[in-house]
Length: 285
Image (cartoon, rainbow, N blue to C red; front, side, top):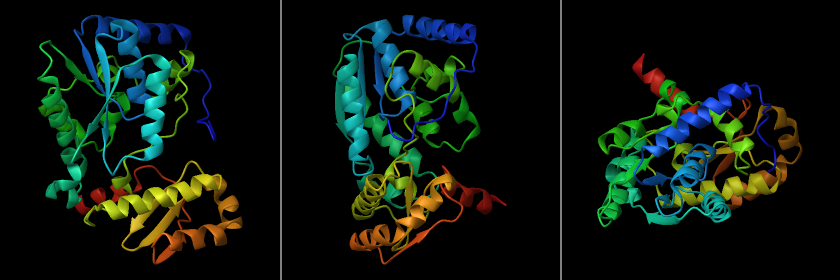
């Protein structure tokens, strides 16, 4: 994978073994698992472990397909499940039709996850068995702004990584140790996260953002964000790659304008995950 996450196995092997044992015990108690799978490393580890303990007959990965999901992430999810023998189901979710989601207030993720879990539950009622819905939420999510966790609570979703006290670094170490090709996959939140709060989410904006990030990826910047600021594009890449981006900016700028942006600019701060959440803190002060 290009530009992998830099990670050395710094967590003692004993701690990794104990984490594996906790996950084994957790899934031993699980009658059947329906994993909300995004294609990212967190939910991938959950899906892998459910298959490892429960077998293919008692686990399923469910991917929510909508305009806010990158096609590349859907393809990664499909390949991962095929590689590891995990049954996969594609859910066509309709959050883009929910006015509360489209409005794009700071609780947008709540409405997205609510739609996901309601759609998933509607499918699971057809199964005459006890099934636990599982997410990839982990220990590190407790310190971040995660309105989707409230939707999960309301839907009685379980979080095996969080409940087993496993955080992001250990997740990546376990994923690499068990040969999961997504162990170093950069975080890839939904495309709606590129639109500032208060600016409506539309399918057209989401498609433009995805196409713009594809332009960056094709130019050698797989880790990037294109923020949809009104009608303009604000481009972020890791600060260590800023010089490389400047060197080819003229061509990238031309292509971004060709996608329908009225302007395109470089963010001098560089890539920062969750940057738009800063506005939430300002509003509360």
